[in-house]
Image 1 (cartoon, rainbow, N blue to C red):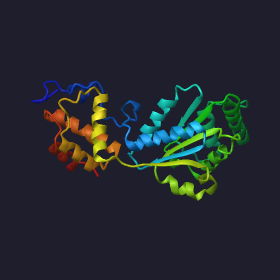
Image 2 (cartoon, rainbow, N blue to C red):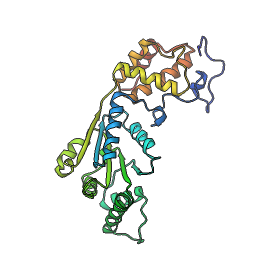
Image 3 (tube, rainbow, N blue to C red):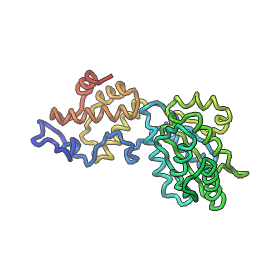
Image 4 (tube, rainbow, N blue to C red):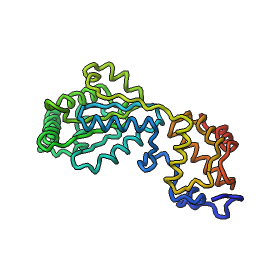
Length: 287
């Protein structure tokens, strides 16, 4: 759809700018929707390696990256891939900031959906219940129990020690808990300080920003997922170059800049996002 003049009807509160562009969904939301997960080389490699570790039941995997590299969206994609498997139990914790051992263990019990026999459980009760759950599911029923913790840089030393203890549960062939920590890079030096935790790391993968061709592919992919046919294009080559330069290859920043650019496109009634629109947006960007 080409806009040659400002639209006669601006998008309503419930419609959004994307309907004016002929799209059926917002293409550049920063929410971690797996349907809009662009598999760059980095993300594909991370997913493949994690899935191998889970299949072999090796124990502990670390996925690290700066803010905005797509870690959370990757974790949702992993959930999407595993949730339908009958031989896998997938659990996720999104906010792992626990001040006490009891709070950390309570969160694990809730994540695993474990029913406790006592109304006022002690720390020992929590530990025994989790241990029984892992042996029941992992040994007697032969299931792969996966726990993914997003924003794992929030874990304190006490919580890391609790997780280390859970990784001790194993058979002669495999770990009973498959733990995936998705975190900012600041977690790594803290993990290195706990040597007996570091020794249990089976996979460490660091997500890097996208290069310019991947930035272009991400933009085209997300537009296509939202209903764009790609003809005519909504972004010029110069605009994509400017977005890549401004976002430095970080997927979240790319999405934010593209969102603002399309909103400005509709507001100005122009046919395509060009370099001038992006540069104007960058000049007003809050640093």
